[in-house]
Amino acid sequence: MQHSSYPKPRTLLIVWLLLMGLTVATMVAGKVTATHSIGTVWLAVLLIVAGLKSSLILHYYLDLKSASAGWNKLFSGLVWFILLTVFAIYVVGKNI
Image 1 (cartoon, one colour):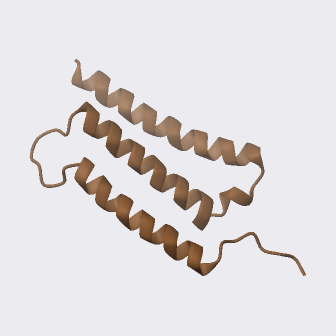
Image 2 (tube, rainbow, N blue to C red; image 1 turned 180 degrees about the horizontal axis):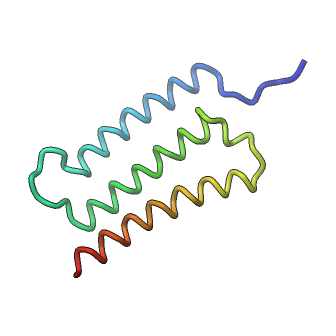
Image 3 (tube, rainbow, N blue to C red; image 1 turned 90 degrees about the horizontal axis):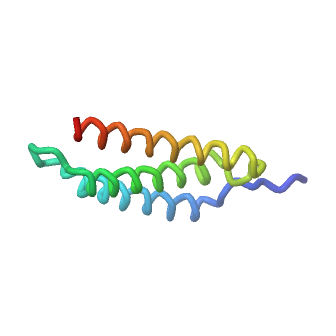
């Protein structure tokens, strides 16, 4: 019998609760009710929280943690690269 690396339901529930908390943090950092720009610092916080959420989803719900180290680093690196690119585009656009 092969042992599955997929997380137990309890672990998935805890991760889901953490994701819900991070969703609230995203709403706070993004100032969802504000009518003005959130600013560079809040955008950085927002993107960090989004990166943490995507990492949790990749590792627990898509089971990336059981993949080889190369795939794990590639996907995680791509997510953070995209988030850093979004941040850089915002900063450059704000300063033009």
